[in-house]
Image (tube, rainbow, N blue to C red; front, side, top):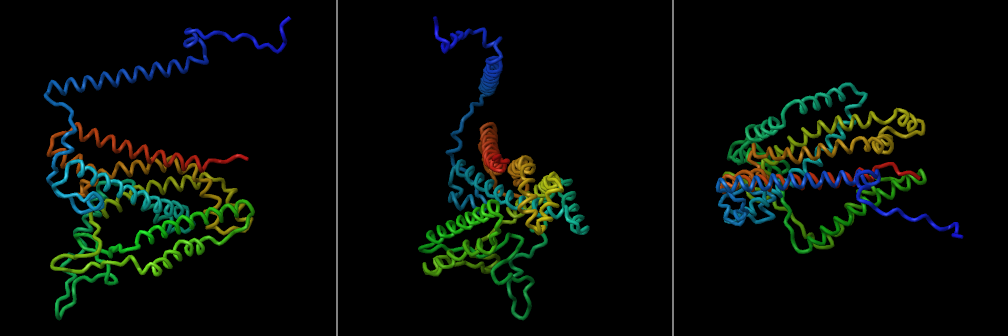
Length: 412
C-alpha cells in the first residue's frame, strides 16, 4: 500500500501546451511578437542599407575623426573639452552635448522652482496674486516657445547697453554703470566675478560638499523625528549653519584658497571675470518660464486632488498654513504631480534643440548643424542625435521613476 504523503506524478511538458495551456499561452504570444518585430527591424535596416548602396552612400562614422575647422562661442563645453578650430568633429559634438546638458539641467531646476511657487500661488485667496499667476500661465502656455526665445534674446541684444557705454568720460557721467562694481549686463553678455582656484581649493570644495550632505541628512533626521514622535525640531537655521559654518572656517584655515577675478572694461569690451552669453540666458529663461507654466497647472491639480479634510484636520491641530502645505498637502500631492512632471522634464530637454535659433552651440547646432553641413553625413548625424536624445530621455525617466517609487504609500 502506497503512502498517503506521496505526491501525484508530474505531468510531462508538451509543445501543445505553449498554445492551449493558459499558463504558457501569453508568454508564447509575446515571444512570437518580439521575433516578428526583430525580423521587421532587420528587414527595414537591410532595405535601407541596400538603397543607400545603390545611391553610392555607405554609412560611415570616420568623419568624426576629421578636423572640424570652425570656431564655437566660448561656453562650458569649450572649457571642459579645450575645443579649438583644429579639433575634430567628435570634439565639437562633445561641446554640444555638454552645452545641452547644462541648459537642460539649469532649465529643469528653475522651471521646477517657478512651477511649484506659481502653482501654490495660483490657489491663493488673494485675488490679485491668483490672477497674476493665471496671466503668467495662459500667456506662456499659449504662445510658441520659439517666439519667447527670440523675444527674450531680442530684449537682451537691443535693450541692454553696449560695453563702451560703461566707459567713464572725463567731465561726463557714463551711460551705464556696473552693479556693486562687479556685475555688468550688456548686449554681448552678462559679466560677473569668476572664482580663481588656488592651492587648497579642492579641500574647500570637498568640505562644501560634505557640509551640504550633512545639512540634507539633518533635514531627513528632523522629519523622521517629527513623523515618529511629533516633536518639531528647528530646520532652516540649523541647515544654514551646518552648510555654511564649516566652509567659512575652512576658507580661513586654508589661507583663503579661492579668490575672485572681477570684470574690467578694457578697450571696447570687458576682460576678466565670467561672461555668460546672452544666447544661453535667453534660452534658459524661455525654457524655464515656458515649462514652468505647465508645471504650475500640474502642481495646482495635484494640490486640488488632496481632500479638503486634510487641510481642515491640520488646522484643527494648530498647524500653520505653510507647514500644512509642506508637511501634509504637498507630500500627498506629489503622487499625482510626479508622472506628468516627468513628461515636462522630457519636453524641456528636447525643446532645448531650439537653441540654434539664437546661436547657442548645443548638440543640434554642432553635430546636427555645422558638422552635418560640412561633411554631408546627414544620416549618421541624425542617427547620433536621435540616440543622444533617447539616452537623455531614458536617464531622466529612470531617475524620476526612482523618485516616484520613493513617494509611494508605505503600508505598515
